[in-house]
Amino acid sequence: MSVLILLNSRAGALYSGGITDPAGIVERAFATAGQDAEVALIEPKELDQELERARESRHETVIVGGGDGTFSNALGKLADSGKTLGLLPLGTMNLLGRDLGFPADDLEIMAEALAHGEVRKIDLATINGRPFHTLAGIGYFSRVARNRERTRLSIPLGRLISVMLSVWRSVTQTGRISMDITLDGKEMQAHAYAALVTSNRIGNDWRRPHLDEGLLELHLMRQTHLAGRAKAGLELISGRWREGDSIESIVAKEIDIRMSRPRVWLAVDGELWREPTPLHFRIEKAKISMLTPRSA
Image (cartoon, rainbow, N blue to C red):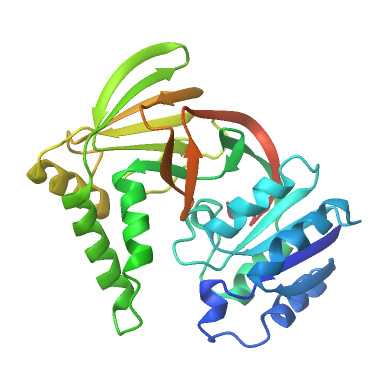
């Protein structure tokens, strides 16, 4: 199996400077496993060009090292390429990395697990035809992402303070959204403070036990008064949101969301997207071949 590995040089785990010679670490792990791997450390501005080259390359497998947003971008470039894809989770949240069963936040251990991994099929979710791998949020969720961009702090505990400030500002600033929603042909109206669509069902701990159910899950946060919004926000952070009554969850294979706004902000896999409405969510079962750790 011929493998190409592109490491985002600005990924959180690499940009912090705690890892020396990341490309060498990964290359040695694959060589020890008897794999023919070409490894490159890529600047973010060059990543799109390298992914385009990867489409036409001789390599059967393309692995991206980075965060959730980096891999979401790679899906957009390579989902229909016929290549096996892989992820080395080196970002901040690493939601997909956790769900794929990576054993530790250690580059050498993760590279070894992937070098000895197995190929399995996972679902591909899309918004208006653009692929995403974990979640897309409207309203409160996109407001948190936008506020985080404005309140990044380079001080001790800066990330935690930034998150808390973003959550509070989002709770107090976000208004109600009126939506006409179609789920597998069934129509409903919703007046909600936020909507979240996940690829496959997601648990209290924000982990997905399965990545191949062929299902989307819509989560509606209907509370509109400040106390209710604060309660829902705290339940989300604490992972107890399925225990309360603040959020309603519905499973479907296709979801259309119509709003009066011509365009809307979404928080998608850790990145901000600006999308035209209506929003068309689809999922294709077992569409993507993924190289994953065997422990998954």
